[in-house]
Length: 628
Image 1: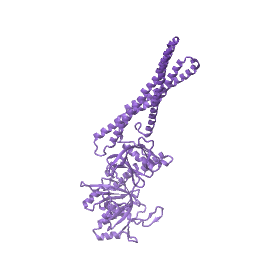
Image 2: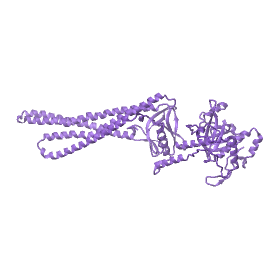
Image 3: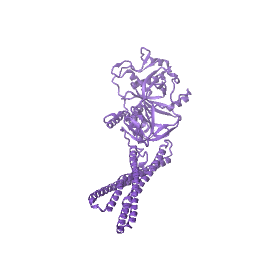
Image 4: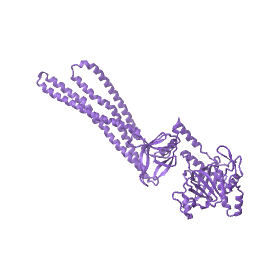
């Protein structure tokens, strides 16, 4: 962090600057008084000289006495205060102006660096801007060190500067008033000796402080300029994920019109459960956002890097901020997540933050190999049928265990929100009705759901999706689950949105429970593989094959968390795919429907097994049901 980059340092600097200004005013007034005394003494010399002409016997003595007093006052009283004003106070004022110019240059270079584009960057322009920022910071650092050194030295010199004229005046008066010198010379000598000792000790302290500043400047000159470059450790930043408070400069996005926005660089800091902002020149910070129970995540914002958004507990989008580097971006996100969980209210918040983050990392199931799924202690006939049907649709993989790199390419990005760019491509090719441009499709767009032989609704929460390399093995689903959960734990993304997953004999539809709008739609024939987690039964995922605009096909795995067992969703998907296979043969379709038991109200029971309620009491026929 650069010197004088924080409000506390700038506030302390303003105290020194105010002291220097007050000292300058006082010195000017003192000099005027001393010059008046010196002028009066010169006038006294002329008057004495004129008087001495009348007193011939005392002409030489009186003239010499007042002349020596005037000369001594000029040398020991007026001259030191003039030198102090012209040398020290003028130097501080000059260095202050240089420091202000360097600070303005640094602000301009940082503004230019913040506007660097994220994509298709001109590397030469980026390199030039980074060098400009580093040079500006170096210049500001050097000018601030010189300025602070002068201010520190002024604190020592001002005590001596105010004392020397008084001592000179006292010495002149003592020499002038020879008569009676014996009466007070003993006390005055002890006082003058003690003052001399104090002046000498202050001079020693000043020399020691000046030597420290010289050493600091030499160390600064020997440091590599890359230290001043922003985001210098982008390859492997040392990120502290256990912060419960954070402070620093961020760029705040503000809307200036319907589509226009501006960015302002301000100083932000956390205080308890609040995010505070302190503009430059303000004496205190103001409340910007209440962080309790809020959520935060990195976002793509316009053409800027390292942006993150804070969302309120009711789901409304809050403010969008931009950090200076990747390290600052991730540390701000981790700190706000820790604060949102109200860790700061505990007795030892640092230890609680470390424990919670370790627990989050340990909660990720380390699936390193994919063996055969262990059989349940009480497997039902429907679950056996599910495994048989799923094996028909998704054949078992080869004998050897696939490596993670064979399943998912290293560095594959993870999408934590449902975004299906291929959906619009499919709709255009089908020539269907135009869908809502905001990604929301009305229920009327899917009339086939009304006459579907299978309609089963499940409450799920979308965890993430990612591109995969194969769809021939369930191992790819398990590996995707592991990577999605690991990414959520590492980046402190724990909030999810609840949706309804409708399984029909033709499609899988993800529906918003609030608006009943279809967020995503998957053709059941494009679902190539599906499975529930081997240990966490509530996790379920499936692999979808979708066409691309280039003419090829892409494979993506979607991971969900369900309120019920994931096996029920898998069984519903398996039944839907089997209905698709036998729909061309009415007899086979009738046999399939007859093999599924009916309830009293005419609904098909998909999983006829006992399930426990949340309070431990059994409940019959809690399995998934569908209407024929």
